[in-house]
Image (cartoon, rainbow, N blue to C red; front, side, top):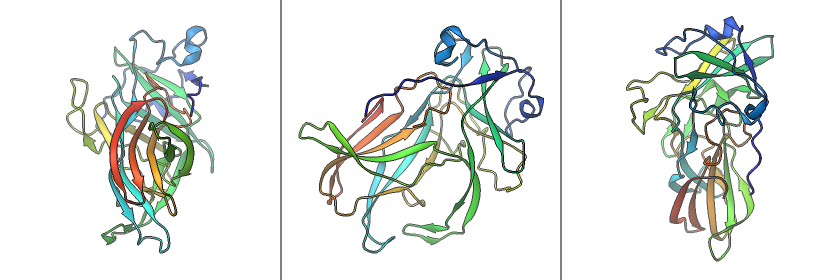
Length: 285
């Protein structure tokens, strides 16, 4: 899978006061909202060519871990389950501000903070989805279902076949898990820019939501355990060596300081489920 060029169709906004006033619980309020100049080298995205002016996020997926062979969820099918972790290793938070502009339309802006603490808003192609999540947990039974606002296509789960040298050959299967809350669940990489307490809480469950803020702070991760719904790829009938690949922001919807480190993978033999190693922070399988 070759890396795709990263061109971001973002529009900076200076006067969206309704959205700019939305802040996550516990987040620092920005002094102002100002545009970043468009054009020139910024056509590749202001985070790529900002020369340190902006504190941008850097999204990575940790290598899939806690792999489990599941033969009970769907009788007759073999599911390869794995824990996933969407991590922010950047210099600033990943923050999305959603604003309902009609009965069925929600516009999503990405907030980027600069060195002075000012907010810069960029309209994105990102979409939110009010997703129903089953209460069934693998190995635990039913813990109660619910519906949550999540970022659509925040990640991708893929299974790639490997040649005798361990190189990716082709995409074999994909998993159903693509939507994420974006939240501060675990502080996995503390730094001086990483807040000690969570800033972005769990997903909103209000179906009539007018405004919402989703995000993951620097040094924090949004983690989903292998027992959670859709944390799997159907591997029924497969034999051989494969790479279980997890990709952050596969559709390039978000502004980041780096985009060639969004892929991580764990090498496994099927049907035994034996793990051979991992690789994290790369550009492609």
